[in-house]
Each structure stands twice: as C-alpha cells, then as structure tokens.
Image 1: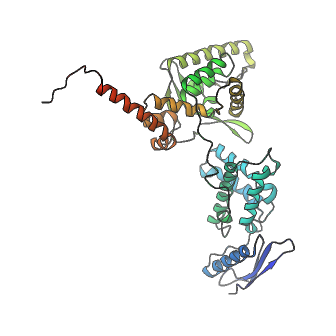
Image 2: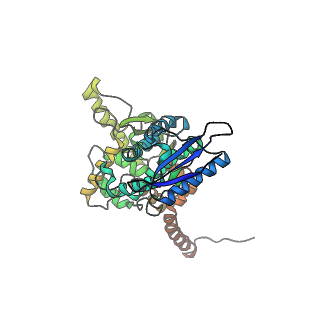
Image 3: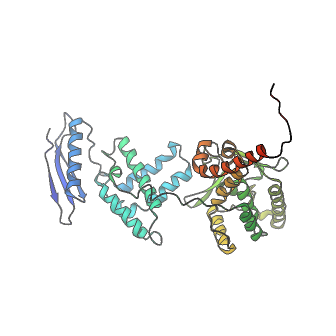
Length: 393
C-alpha cells in the first residue's frame, strides 16, 4: 500500500496535496486530492492525517458531495433525533451564513482555514445578510452548528475528520450572553402604569408577574387557565418555524410543563382580558378566528412572539426606564422572588428550569445578596425584644 504524497502551492497562494491510496486489502489504486489549505503546514498536517488513517484502516474515501447538499440532508434528518422544531429552525437559519461562501465547497475539501475566514467575514460584515457585523456570540453559535453537522458526518463515516475542531471561532469569554438586567418592583409597576390600556398591557403584566417565556405567554389558552384557583398551566408554546407561527406542545425543558399561581391582581387582569375578548367575538361574529388564546389580535389570530418583543422594546424606550429586553421580565420576576425569600427549588418549578442547581448557577449572586438581608432579619428577631421564654429541660 502506497501513501506517498506531494504538496503543491497553487497560483492563488493556497496549498494542496495529492497522494496514492488503496481503500482496502483488495481494491484498485486511486488518488486522494485535497486543496484550499491556507498554509503549507496545514496541508502537511492533513496529508499526515490521511496517511495515518490509511495505515490504521480508518481512511474515509473522498466525498464529491457539496457542503450545501450535505447540510440539506443533515437538516432533513434532524427531526428523528428528537430535537424541538424551533431548535432545528435555529440551525437552519444560522447555516444561511455558511452557504453563500462555503456551500459549493466539496464536503471533504473543507478546511479549518475556510471556517476561520468565514468567521472573520461574519464579524466584519455579516456577509451582508444583516446590517453590520455579527456579534462574537452569534458567530460562535454559527461555529457550534457547523461543528455539530460535521461531527455527525464523521460519526456516520461520511467524513474523515471534523475540521471545525481545528478552527478558531470567537472565544467563549467574548461570546458570553448579555449581562443580566432586571427591573425593581417599583420600576415594573411604573412601566405597567405607563402602558395601561394598551393592547399588550395584560400580556406584559402576566409575563412580568409569572416569569413565563414570550412563546409560553403568547401560546397560553383559556383551557389552561383556572381563574377560580388563580393559576395557569403551561402546556404549549407559540414558536416560529420557517417563518410560520406554530403551536408546540413541547417546552424548552422537561419541566417546562408546569402550573403557576397568579397573584389576585394579575388574576383580575386576566378576567378583564376575557371580558374584552368576549366583546371582540361578539362584534366580529363569524369572522373571529378562535384559537382559544388568552392573548391574541383583535380578530383572534395568534400574536408573533418576536413582534411582541419589538413592541415591548419600543415602549420601554419611550418610558424613560432602564432598557431591558422582554426576556428580562423573566429575570425581573426571579429577582423579585428571591428578594421575597422564595427558595431555589420552588423558583425552579415556577420558571420551568431543568433543576434547582441551574437556578442557583444562573442567579446565585442574587441569592447571596438576599442571604445577607435574611441574616440581618434573623439577627434582628434574635436580638430584639424578648417576647417569650424558652426553658430547657
């Protein structure tokens, strides 16, 4: 078996190699060629890896399939993996940044250098798919998606190695999520007063007082509301898939299906919402599109969660309050619960977190602040005026 190979620099400055390979003990001799390496060292490393694979019997013959064609098949097969439709749609949208420049490249000829150049272009310009460059966090997620796709090809024996593992995406530190923000209870009250009477006021009140995600509150049905007991059951969410709104019974975590108690004032707001909606049904008659949704357009059609978030952003900008995102209403609710002395396990259940440990990891600093306040309160009770005598026997 011969794996002697040679390196060659192309007119455009990139490097390539060609080597003889034999796919097995019996078989016709054939050549393996790979090009597009940014440096001679990168080409040599790939050649050495191929030689090692041939020697160990793990060599994967070249695939003439384009990256774009492979990604099409990969995406089509993801529903059987158990991933949520919204997750798959997120993968599809992120791969739109990969296809324009690398989609036509042969799957087996993709290099780490190709990916590095893509990441640099995305940071600089976003490849004109959006105004300005992408954030490091967004580019790192593109890397995560393409790495998963290539890793699956390696696992199935369609690719010799995952070149994304050798790429240099933005660091995890630079891709940290935005710093958590929240409103104090008086700030939330001020905002609710500011938007009182607006179409989305009731929805925002429920989100701020329950910590429900925007897809959960937009997908809330009257069948899942128990006003006699003052509680709602989270059993579905409204998400966007391929640009279309869909209802999904799957929640973000296994504990996402949960029951949330409402405070009396919020329960009253929901009752008023039901009365307003009954008026809309009466006025529109047969043209009312009934999806049993608690929050919907005047004609009953579902609200787009992303549009709701944009309206919220515009109202916040006009209010003069500190800028927060719609999702930060969820953080605000957690901060209020912690300040009220609620325990991590109960908060995790209310928010639908996977575990109480996740709640502690995410909001540990708030628990620390609340802990010092609680310690002072306990000391005040112990060291305050004596109201009872305890006798040890």
